[in-house]
Image (cartoon, rainbow, N blue to C red):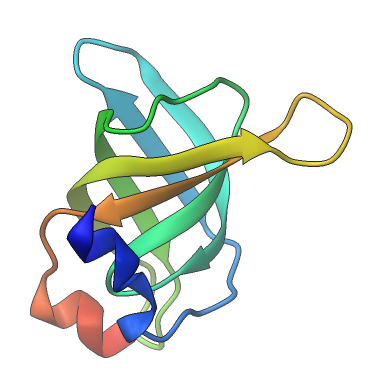
Length: 105
């Protein structure tokens, strides 16, 4: 949990971009982000994701030269209800960060 405590060391960009994620052995789920930073992503989910769950993540980030696709591995650090509907909000910490993505963020 130590690196999650320092999650705010990266600037958050409050952007809504398409994101796909897959649990190990699971199907691909599509959703949108609330914000993205070099350290992780806050995203919507229609299903509960347990803390510690490993995810394969694909972000589609707009850039001046066209859309950039960022593939990463992440770990769910929290997941909670959002409002009164069935939507959940989840925080996912990236396990690997590419330098070209850091420049975009």
